[in-house]
Length: 562
Image 1 (tube, one colour):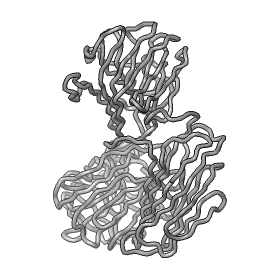
Image 2 (image 1 turned 30 degrees about the vertical axis):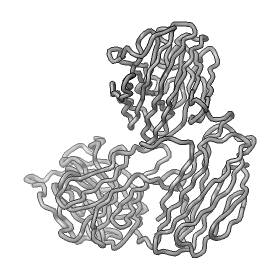
Image 3 (image 1 turned 180 degrees about the horizontal axis):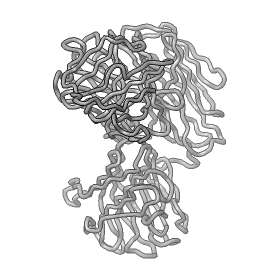
């Protein structure tokens, strides 16, 4: 590792790109682009690890400032590396000082237009990046000298690694992120129309701070041409199962890229103790080997489908399970991410929701029923409150990932205790512990029909805005009624109510809940505000949407293989 702390008097930052025909490892060239005073000699390649230092204000807007180590690549490709930040350098600073660097410093893999001027700061490109906190993003500049675009930050989870992958298929550039089980998840894609067949592809780093040098380490760097690709879809008829239940009609669909033919083998693994039956494929042959389906597809082309029935083990424990496997194609084996994630229940699902339970110590057991004929959920709940640093209530929920909207018409019937503060309504919760971060679009008794409530972080105090509470609906025999909605977009929680005459959706409040990370638990909550007393919430017109689509309890997994 090199350190540089001398300041050269009269040093001028580069205002024009500088190209260097200086190979590094498997790359043929290096470029210092834009306002960036790093040098090719700062970079090294030792024992398969690239150490790259860069200054520069950013890779963004209409012109870029960064260090690029690259080579020409023609056609579709898959570029993969393990990217990690090293210590920052600030020339003239005490080398023992530790600096975290700018929030938006970036390292990643870039594909850059090499036709007009490969070192032009405003060149078209697509790239996958990790920023300071290892959150991922996909960026692009679709037009020469035009504005940059991105899909939005995806935070790193406990299941993620820093292995990143950029795949080009035509004009579509897709980022994948590695998982601890050896698979990959899709982060997102950018389309850059009419990209030339040959691009400069390599490693990029910017400090987002022209006064600093940021160091990044790239290992296991592989750039390979894609000769064939495939898409594997898994579908199961339900997201929830119960012990001993038959899950009939699980389906795999494998599609090989148009114009290609390949020998493929798909291995479908199921949870231990679960039973496979009625395996049928419209192409190839199948066998059950060590409790897994092995689907052999010699000369595969187009789309082939396999179906089977699955019986859940009678002693299956409650919780999350996955159906997964592997694919061998083009002589390479890949762990097939895009699992079907199921939830094992002890009882039947409650309508569209997976499960229900008492959270905290409510003092009286809650309950939940669903009338399919009327679409009515009846939920009984006790507990001291949904408030302070820990909640006591009954919750009917589904575990989902992505943006969610939950709409419901709520009747709250108070059965004792402190009726003014009994509560019912749709909730989005980070976890199922009493102190979880959440957003709660509540209806409470005592004439305060609608109230926005939240807990920002695990174990923090509950909060609400009393000034934002809305008096409406009806007050009759200790009953409150109203149609309300809660929306989760990342950490943003929005609260809506519906005009009782026109049914118009009306936004009325917003709050940020920093601890709201995928997966989340979305559902219907009831508390009596008195330990041991029971209040009842009657919920109708319930609609749950995930990522803009009506939520149906069907499990789907999709995985692109390249």
